[in-house]
Image (cartoon, rainbow, N blue to C red; front, side, top):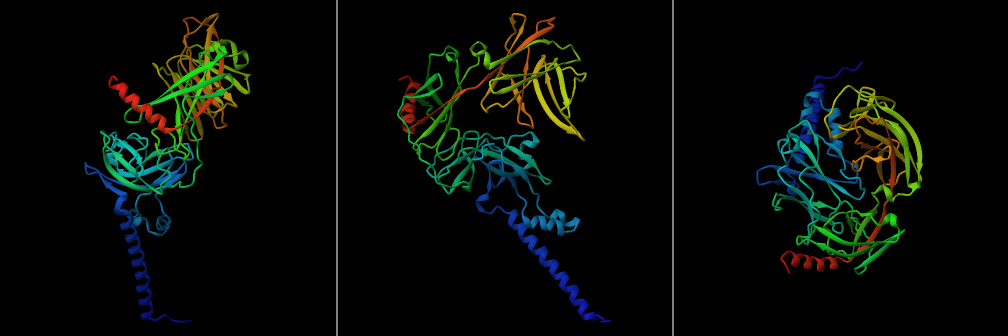
Length: 455
């Protein structure tokens, strides 16, 4: 048996202590690096608030401030030393568009929306090196709490200078003046296809409809756009169709407005939609007849299925005013509650129980639609006998886990009604795209400005 000498034991203890001190020194150094402003990544606003820019994520990708060394340190450090580590935050991107970015900031919790106070700025905006400013995003973004007095605040940007390797990110006050700036590396650099614009007016045809873009007016500040359209069709079912609000994009992937006037072309996209029941052919609508009006505290389970074009339409229930719920996707119920008005939808869980509920101040129907296209709309028309009941507006919808939509729409019943007929129409819009020379809009912009002063 070998006996350890006292000197060796003392050396071993010193070596262990030295190793611990080295590790703590490294942790302290990293903490110092991550706690300072690191130059332009921190901005001090006029009210004294320090805002730190943390980084960028693409699409819906998760953004996290936790680093590998932090995960290792959490496992290695004793519990009492865990508070030496900084808070870590994780959040998903704000926009569904996979070509969008989300910018993330760290702000004092007292300055964030978690305290019901506005952020100490009124807008977030990307700017290129020529000074052109892209679409301004409002002062509220998604937020995520930490364990400290700091909070992660995120904003989704669909447009920014994609042709540059870096760009400016500005925080703006109420008057649009810059109160904080950050230099941001472009996470989506690349080469882009070239779009060739056409002169105005332009005509685009889709099915029975010809749509003409005569001109595009811009407000003097370039933020408000007003296309002038002409709709031409010989089909009477499309003559009263509505032209939707236009969407703008450029070949680099930017969406929204304003877009850089240095781009060779802007794409203007819109849809033409029918929203009047008389404009739909028999194959574009289904009718559910003799649907019993529910009494207070009960609901009418219909569960009838019909085909509407290539979609499947299922009238689920006719619910009374108040709340209707579904538990675990199976059990339906009407709790004994009264609600004065409005329409809300909620979903959640309690233990193993998953629930979903709808609350309305009027009786309402739930209709499930399968095999829809993204821009499809569902319209409702209800009758009591031969009388058309008042129109209650466009219905809302929720998405199910299987990918179908559940539409909900209130019904204005007459007193004493016993049954009604429910007509469901599938409105599939026609899409139109135009490639516009930004110079054309600048000329129109000048005319627009002159018109504003009476010329």
